[in-house]
Figure 1 (cartoon, rainbow, N blue to C red):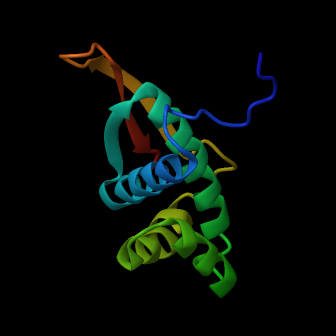
Figure 2: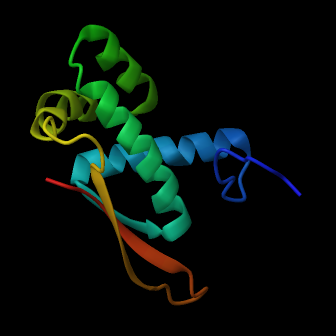
Length: 117
């Protein structure tokens, strides 16, 4: 029995999971909300919270740390210059997960992951 696992593996290899989470986080900051499975939403939420906290510093080092994870430079700029300053007063809880429906075909539970404004 595995104990103290820090993250969900999402039935993927390490590289595939890391790539999936990077792409979902980029899409979240680009569109302000995404619909995905509940397990993926929880993992992306963890990553997004850490990225927003890092981006709140606003200096060059934090911008570069965020750019290591996100895949588009325009999204990095949006996160550091628009999203993070708008959430400056909050101490956490920058994302909201709302369960929406069951997907046709495999009955996977889908959730809406959105940024709290």
